[in-house]
Length: 112
Length: 114
Image 1: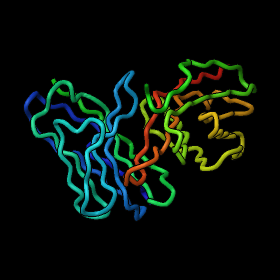
Image 2: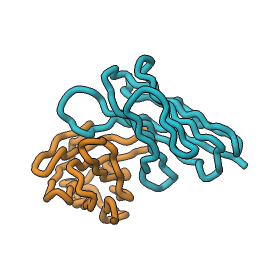
Image 3: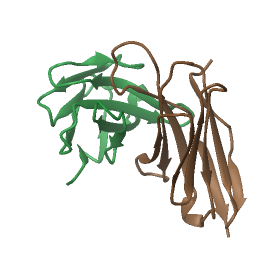
């Protein structure tokens, strides 16, 4: 099992450009999450999906949109990138009954 | 007030010593707690889960939960240089219908020196 996979691993965008970060899990988990991690700020939840067909805002949703494409895949879209969105983005998934979250390898995004 | 707070660190211990990492939380109804290890440039890796009061041991790691005092700790026995990493405490807050939604502390950097 690959666990949680994310693409791309690295990305550089110019201000105003758009992009989609992809995430997939093969653990048959119901719930999926997108976090960003910044120095001194810890992990902050952007959006989550408790189950296929549902999505909810987390702590820092502004400037992002998400799509739960199916049970396996959860994508994060930046419509108009800003330098403040320079960060490391992690996707995670969990089984409802244990709440244990498993993380993907991350995407390092730089917006210039 | 942050909902999950970790001792500020950084923490430095000699090889072979016990490393003690602490975390407090503000939501008295919180049920589940987790410790993650994150190496520099890598993603968080789950190392311990604890759901009830008391101790839970797994190899060199012991997680302790005290709901009355609202704290969680992680003890690492016989610390090794390979344990050098940032340790994140996370808790599932009570209330709502947000299954699995966790709140993370800021992390404690642990360095184990030979």
